[in-house]
Image 1 (tube, rainbow over the protein chains, first blue to last red):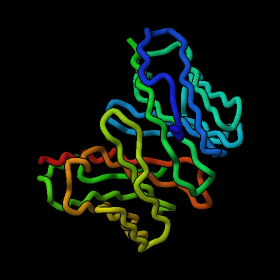
Image 2 (cartoon, rainbow over the protein chains, first blue to last red):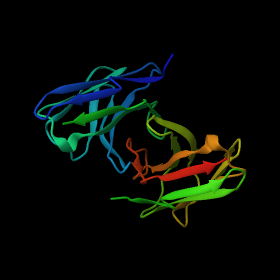
Image 3 (cartoon, chains in turn red, brown):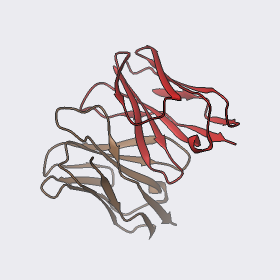
Image 4 (cartoon, rainbow over the protein chains, first blue to last red):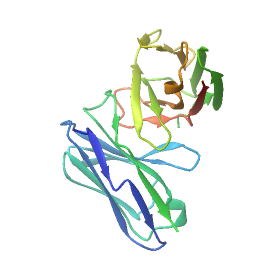
Amino acid sequence: DTAVSQTPKYLVTQMGNDKSIKCEQNLGHDTMYWYKQDSKKFLKIMFSYNNKELIINETVPNRFSPKSPDKAHLNLHINSLELGDSAVYFCASSAGTNQKQYFGPGTRLTVT
Amino acid sequence: SQELEQSPQSLIVQEGKNLTINCTSSKTLYGLYWYKQKYGEGLIFLMMLQKGGEEKSHEKITAKLDEKKQQSSLHITASQPSHAGIYLCGARPTQGGSEKLVFGKGTKLTVNP
């Protein structure tokens, strides 16, 4: 009965590969997010979707492409992975604006 | 852009001691959220503060929002090893419900038994 789930939890891959991280929420929320937490634990917003539409796209390389097939899912696809992409990626969801965000357990991506 | 500065960056206390973590914003605060992150895990929501002067408590954790000072504090009374983790404050950078949260860099709390 996990509220926000992410798969995989760990992802180790080589530079240049393409990988995807999946996120699902069963809370019935309209808004979903992707955050990146770097090695210094700094958490920063990447994207936000509301009702399957992109509403926030921070300064993120074009190699990152979010996709929301439905309100309950927001996947993150990364092309041509680079060493600097190594981080923990968190998915979150909320019922709307001014509402608290529920975070998934994170996906630790390591690019070698 | 809004920045949140947390202090201290890390804190080591003896079990049973009280402690305070501060979060100061470079701009007006429109909602302040406190989260806790256990090492290697996701973020757990603690409290949300929206009005100046607001104060909320949950078990031994109390959070206050001083809107005029653009600051929030998180106070833990009689700390326990279970309180250990990274505490993050997050804020909405604009009024009217920005969908994103801007986070501080976190305060790492260690509680020694």
